Amino acid sequence: MNEARWVVQFATRNKGKYDEAARVAANYGVELEQLNLEKYEIQADDLAKIATVAAEQAFNESKLSPVVAEDAGFFVGALNGFPGPYSSYVYRKLGLEGVLRLLGNTAERAAHFSSAVAYCSGRETACFEGVVKGTVSFTPSGSHGFGFDPIFIPDGCDGRTFAEMDIDEKNRHSHRALAFSKFCEWLRFQSPEK
Amino acid sequence: MNEARWVVQFATRNKGKYDEAARVAANYGVELEQLNLEKYEIQADDLAKIATVAAEQAFNESKLSPVVAEDAGFFVGALNGFPGPYSSYVYRKLGLEGVLRLLGNTAERAAHFSSAVAYCSGRETACFEGVVKGTVSFTPSGSHGFGFDPIFIPDGCDGRTFAEMDIDEKNRHSHRALAFSKFCEWLRFQSPEK
Image 1 (cartoon, chains in turn green, brown):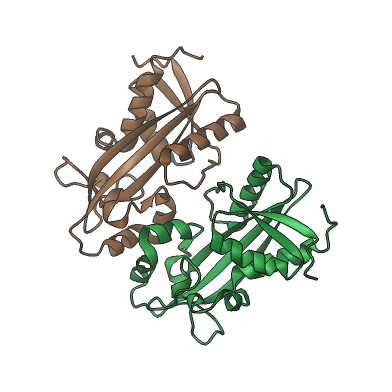
Image 2 (cartoon, each protein chain N blue to C red; image 1 turned 180 degrees about the vertical axis):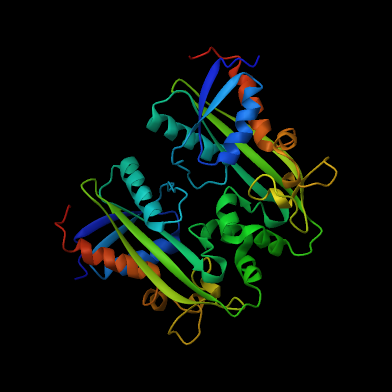
């Protein structure tokens, strides 16, 4: 089961994302290789659309078949879904503190992380989504992971944030792991291309 | 001078933007027609890059020559330039209130609006930028314009916000008018294409 039968290029410059995804894929006999390409991201509220355009673009540029691209976002209910698809920009500009300040002391702290994994082989394009629900903490906690992990408490994990979990534990709960699992399960039923 | 010698398609679905730009262009003998096309916007911190890709994409889709696309943003110094190129998304999600809450009572309220106007004729691509400096007000004021206009006080306008000015007065100061003026001045020295 761990003998790779599929090799897929993962177009991302984020080493943390790559590490998370590669571990998940390895469990399905899928080998992910990091394709260090400038990702072409469009502006859209829909992660699946952003990931699909990115995968098609990466495939066209790299000519390496097949390619996956992933887009993820942190959606805060009381902020109408902000920062959503622009989470990485908002994290760079405002940090965790910005989201906490916008929420203030409100008790309405429901949030979710979503991930869309889009696959493009030239022959076909497919997209798979994963969601993890939880709440926004009042203060940051933990040092693992990246982005908004220190303020996100997934449901059913004893109140700890994503950043308080090591990569293996986070992968048992995360949106990205779920989306990549769906993708790999689907891929195993396709004909190997290499 | 008001007899149109150039007809340019302006790819935008924002009627407010179109109205502002069309008035400026008319002063230079340039007729703008609204091209109601879904604008293809990439994610980037650089407005010129976003506008240029959008203009090229619109040109390729419409086959109408020539085309302009514009991208604008509201850049708040104390927020590291947030919301910048994502101003329209942030406005939809957080409103004026979100930016005011992030700033709180800080006295550091410098901000600017920027506009990048990109032109694509198939033969050539060019981009023109306009910037207007000012400050963020403590409360919204005025009902003209759109987006962050009610909380932006341009320098040298007696402390009034953009939303307290009618379209003609705003056009004497605005980033968009400046960028379109630069574009039209340049266009007048090109050979007419129609």
